[in-house]
Length: 157
Image (cartoon, rainbow, N blue to C red; front, side):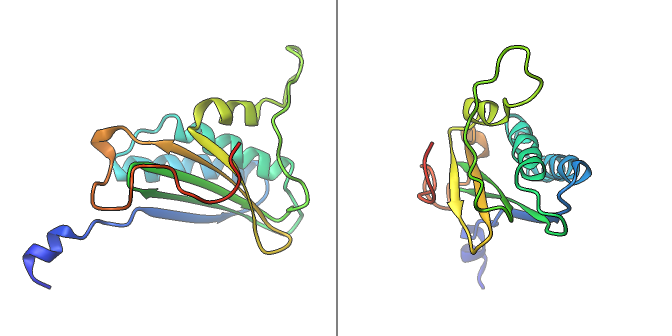
């Protein structure tokens, strides 16, 4: 490959990790995502919060003993996509409206507030993927890789 064509090749930024469906696995998902975003030179917020909420939901509501969940991060153009796949495809997520005194039930409301788009995609049974997209600031976008709009996959919320 000559020097000119090597300069036009944009690095593919993606990361995946298979994690145990436990609180420790959810915490590890957030820590690994934070370190990966840092290594890519991307902002940690709001992505780290979104990963924390989606991973917590996977281990709380999508947990099947003995079946791990998958965290996937990738960047296309100006969009960071976060995906969490669990093995409980029959339980689709939906935002709740808990009372002010409730101690839980706000995870998807937080994701909805922080993400530019989010939704679900069915997987091979018994899997489902809950995803969220975050537009990157212009200085972090990759002009040589894809468009700047959202990724056309799954269900919009």
